[in-house]
Image (tube, rainbow, N blue to C red; front, side, top):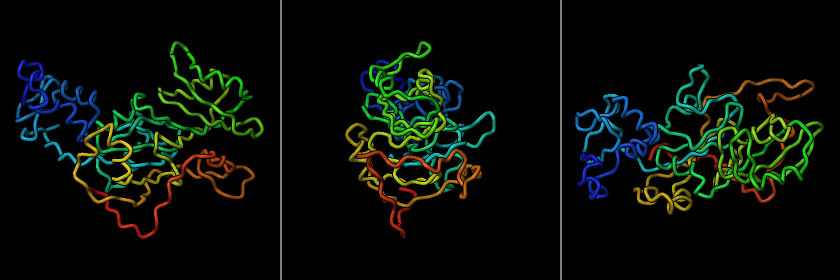
Length: 318
């Protein structure tokens, strides 16, 4: 263990280990920022000594403990596609006692963190990973990855007004980057809009649409970078094959390419998060809460992820 603020640590950082916060993030314990907070709270110890600063370098020979428990062995980075249903909170714990995404995951899932978030009433593709460092990287706009959404709004939509979002927009003092918004179709007083952006700030789409006089009544994320929601049903989760993960992120996140190969998992699992079933007035079929019987089809050119073949033998752990 080395203090990174020491002269030796500064000169030999790469040779003496990695910062403790980065190690905790890669182990899926917490994000780097959250790991630093855990250290400040005295919850992290190295070789029996409680840390007082996150400026500490550790190596594989150091014994790291969190809340008195040994740090789990760092697995190879893995990534899952999850179809988040409405009504689940993307948070480790919810002070209001609402069910979280992580509580709804299959019991054999390893400890994971989300890549970004989706609001309580938002749904669609949520990427999950066991590697905090990978999560942090994929959240950065610098990756250049687009995030695509299908958005249902209430109000009169003018394509010319939507086109002004290409230059970015400021709402209540917050500046949002370029947004591509294309009117797909109108259904009475409602309309479906295809939205593409690269930042994904907190409640960005809802606030921007409200700024235009439109109320968002449904929001579905359909893709995040090269990863697609495809045909995953609400609550279903599927691991991204290792080869695909290496091809897509290996160049920007070396640990993915450097990790020893593990068995690929192509199986699809259903989480325990089940939105309430409600019967729409006049409808003959039961729909999930917030579901639209006439949700628009996949946009032209949008790639679909094939549904896994029956009888897959993929394992859950690498």
